[in-house]
Length: 104
Image (cartoon, rainbow, N blue to C red; front, side):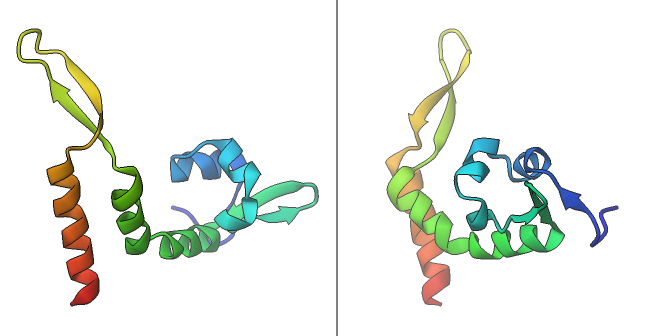
């Protein structure tokens, strides 16, 4: 179990956030990293702050601008592939759901 005294290296923190280490190195303060000597570190408080900062509002932005990847299965070969951006209908539905939560 993780304690409050646990400190993560950039590699460990990137793995937790499922992002590239270089994303953190480009802007460590965005991820609430701090320096210990000449190394960047994060703790559980950093993780909480980052998750709060990047909750529902960023999902709205992601859906409105970027979209996501969708996996589909080929009818003839039954092979599963990423098809690029998610279908517009699905993106509109998710965006509508998120905006509806914010309005209510």
